Image 1 (cartoon, one colour):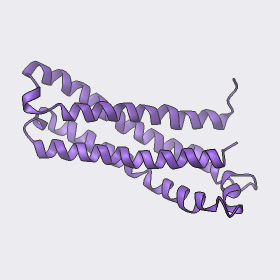
Image 2 (tube, rainbow, N blue to C red):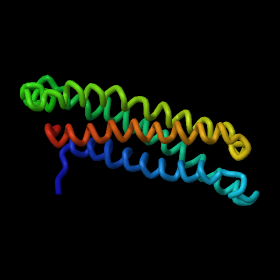
Image 3 (cartoon, rainbow, N blue to C red):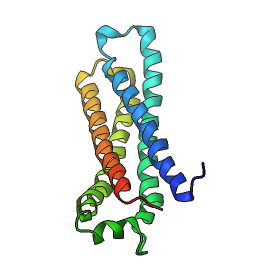
Length: 170
């Protein structure tokens, strides 16, 4: 199997950083949920917090990696002014013009919300540390932000996958 440069970067963007983000999200959500006072021992807190800090930081880094490679590496190929670019393929066909007008325009803006929220969660976890056990409201806020980061990433990822299916980058 041979991958072109653009296919390679698309793979790094979606399956590399995107998959790492999904894995870290699941671990982060489980880690935050399990920090309830009745579920942790003094010895278990140290181990869980280490994993949680590493996991949510990795999630934030993966989210930034996904958005940055998408915006500055993959996206310019989508908007290439050549007549055969995916953007031109979509907008010249009235049946697929909405994929660009709504899907791509929405995706390129909404995707940036995910790493911002993921970074906020990483900050909360690192800043509060074991105090998240006592501060239930802060812990629940971090969980809501984490789920929102995932939701925004899921919408952007789904739109990207569907657009690539209709008009792939060559």
